[in-house]
Length: 574
Image 1: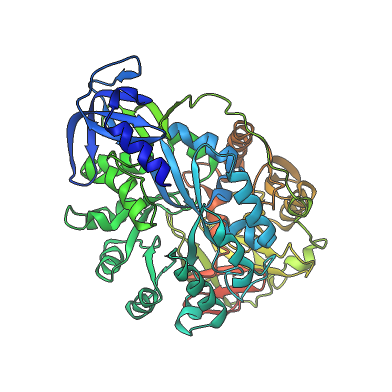
Image 2: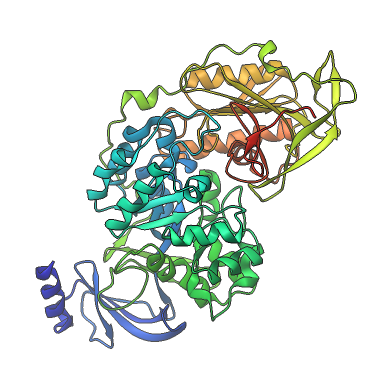
């Protein structure tokens, strides 16, 4: 390290011999929230000078353009993009995202340590820097069946990897409150390595937030309104403002952000499907949306760069300053962020190239993760008595939290029957890891499904099979399609498979180039309109979160309907 520093110092004294000079740019200063005109000198991937330098053959004129730091996504699950890390990298670089902090707990819940190792190995081929937080809660809760258990001892060896920087979202809050030994071991292990511990504090009380902070959990991406955001800042948390496919919290939180407290806020994606990512990006989209709705562009860029770096303990990134890694964007203006050049580690990137890389072999066990018993109509019946009310999962648009609705439902032959006028349809979660035969059943409101069924092996966080539909026959056909593909997404109507996307890597990701996956997803959403009609929400993403029993208010697992507030399973009928 001293040799590198010595070399950089020498070049700082002799700018004419550097690798690249950006001339006459308007630099965005994320420290003082101002801009100024200067040249930027780059050597060995680092910024070695900011000032006025003589032009030479290594200089590029960027007059009338802004130089901003490469964007950092503070929290994303790459598995939710449905492509492997190296392909995700190819897709994201053109949007100016040069670093992401990811939590591989999706694949860990299916394939355990082997899945984590695959993600790290595949990420080593990425042009974007993919930094990992180790999964803290695998399984996420004891109220469902997942594919693996990951202990502190299992994780210990990963702390020697340079790209591993902490412990990912701690969602099992009862284990924190009760000082449960296995989770405390993970927290202490990471603290000793000076790693950063991420929170997952959805709907938690002030008292539990205090306990989280005492446990060295100092950031959270689950604030959904101004009050929750300000409360977290006052308790010392960094607030990651989430704008993904299902959870869109940015506009609700935006009024909480001021010039006085802006350093405590940063942007993240959490979960975003690939077709949306390609169309609008991730963190760049958050910047543009925030600015369009009144946020100072300099604060928005600060939130997308240096704030994320500081929040996660990432050194030498997130700013245009001497000694910082030269991950830079050249943009036209600070409102629409039209990108002219992406500079990664001091080199100008051709973002439209194929970016060929050597593919990492995928373990066979990860490719064979859908293990289910045959599903019959008898297994899908929800018994109810005439006049009996039912607990119903109500989808809230733009949120991954749900509301518990209680209402009378239609009954036929002593069992629940879908009511399309009321938008009440059946939902199931089928265990897919260990042949248990578990099928959890519930009623959901808000899917807008008018006919047929949809099914997916993406079902946070245990990733069992989730399906919703108007009739049992189509739901069974959709589930069988997932078994045949060894994971993916499917739409069925009148017994016909209208569209499907194959995701054989743990039932979560494709092994194909991202361009092919985007085409499949576009076809999927076109066909979704045939069974749903006018669809403004990402229904597959929403469905996947209806299985997450750590997010209020009511969810469905393979063991049945789950009341998150009471933290216990409940019956469908009341």
